[in-house]
Image 1: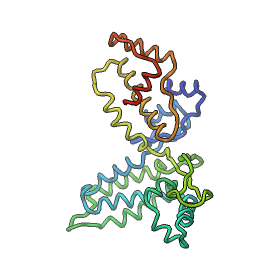
Image 2: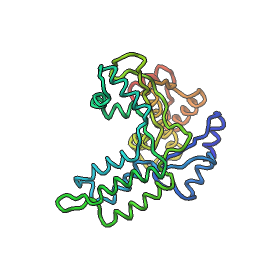
Image 3: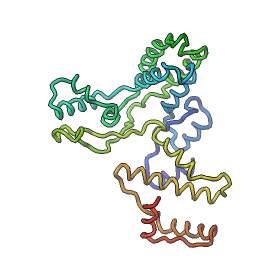
Image 4: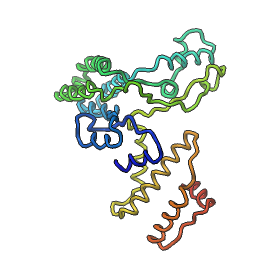
Length: 291
């Protein structure tokens, strides 16, 4: 972590303000101490979907007919839609479809529209607990063919997970924007430009990196790699994955690192395989197109 902090200092980057983990968000353990080396004031939060997964372990089974509905309602209780963004979306739909009322506009709004154009906020602890408790109380007595959704251990798991809610491990921190604007566009490509909507991308939670897990599993195909080879494969894989994500969002990503890094990679490749790399830009472009 000290080396990571040094990299931020070298490139004059702002230190991270928030990190989402799947465990060890509370207390003063080694994990929190390590992150505070990077930034003494960093906020440690718990990933929402890992929290939901913990809660689901208290259900009779995930195949219980009421289980999907319970999870869906818990998710709805966790997030509050931005009123400002929602108003803009409904107005854009009304103008694009020449509708009179918001109710008619609502019928044309899809879940994809909400994810794309409307930011979601996680309320502060007291409000969040109230919203979640309403859902919990509704499903407490739900059963199907005499089989209750909740089991004998559900209450204990619920109380344990409420500790994270009360500690603020799920709530959005004050004064920190968790979204950035990717671009502006018209709803369905219709309407006047003055009703163009912001397309939002969120930095919240670890879910943004879930696709990296399977990518690395494919890249790191052996558990017997030497330290040097492991680091080279890991760096190459992370660079490619990052480049793909940047290009998907319309950004530019350099085709290669600086010359010193290329020479070092070439030397290491020669030591391992006895062959030199083709470091020409033409080769790198061909390599990129076939990956």
